[in-house]
Length: 501
Ligand code: SAH
Image 1 (tube, rainbow, N blue to C red):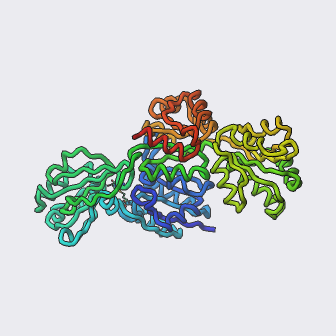
Image 2 (image 1 turned 60 degrees about the vertical axis):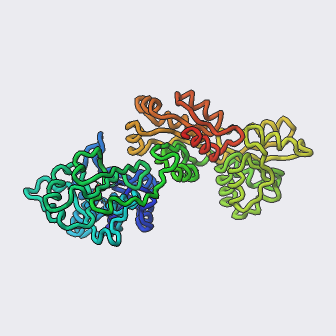
Image 3 (image 1 turned 90 degrees about the vertical axis):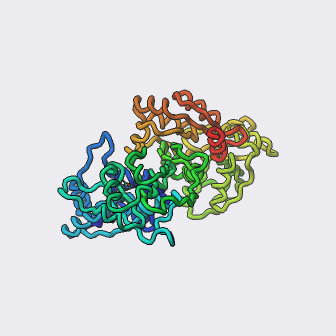
């Protein structure tokens, strides 16, 4: 079987700007080739089993030549795999996508192109600049400022472009601006022509520098930047709210399945979020005790849940074993806190009891107040290592309590190279811990130098007292903690905002 290669545009930076079709390809990919212009979130969002191959030019990695990348595309496709080559912006706009497609065509390998939102249009848009505007600019030219240096003569007719008017968007235009700006002016462009440089367009760290053409060579600007030259560059339809966390890079250490609320909220507040899952949820070593209890479900008066994972894992097992949710019988259901309660409701079940204060002890105290407590039978599906005090409290009240392990949390084998790289660059501002194990595993996943480096560059935020204590044991500087009466993701987010305000 021969595979297929998808040349997919990732969009300019904001991960939301990938197309629906591009995202679908990413999720089906068996092999993903990516470089630095693809946002790490998109790389993260590929299918978990997908093989991810970095083909960029980051320090510490042997850079792949275009030929080597082409060869990889061919090799994987010939193995019969679905290959996605994820490219920043649009694959065919200064992305060398055309060259890759040619190689594939010549080799007889099937391919598809999924166009993307190109940075030359998106970065100006996020900076408040429409590239064409009635009465101001009726044409737009996309041009590279960095032609293949091996060419004896440049192909770009800079003087003609200077005479042409309209809007000029220069890609890769930072390095050689001292060469092409004089040619534009010689060609007839006004030295006073408005210029806008948009660095890291559409990303939280977006930065705009404005000026006039003759000053462009001396402006303090850096790659990657879209350089807009023309009257539209003076427009200022600013709308891109950077938000209270803008410019901050924040690490989320939860499992990918659980991270979504935290990730989305932080991102909505403008943060650049780096997902570093430190926990994987896996089956218990032995299902027998749980299965045995599941066969006797109708003999329990109460089911006690202490985490959303416990709810999901237990109910899935019940359905797998019995094929019938009615196996739960008439048992009442208690949840340790609101998010665990929500997890129960998502399965179409009612929650009979959630303690007012969802802190340790709250659930036990509420349950022990039940009438005839000593005659009641409780089933407690839980993780292998549990923290809830409720079972012990119930036992001392004389109740019958059976605890069954329905999942274990383990440490993943490693981190994505992109995560390692961003941590070692010292650009991470804050790390969030949502449980003691996220703190412990995070520290254990880093080698000692990287841990030291991370601790000295980044502060930490924690979901509650126990987690804070663990994080501090590992030397993290915890500067924000969810308030005691709101030990939740929302509480954590509020404490982070408070810290940065
Ligand atoms: N295929 C890409 C362009 C790749 S060439 C696209 O369609 O956008 C690399 C150049 O793209 C950079 O030098 C810079 O000029 C521009 N670029 C890429 N991402 C950018 C961003 N987020 N903001 C501004 N310019 C960007």
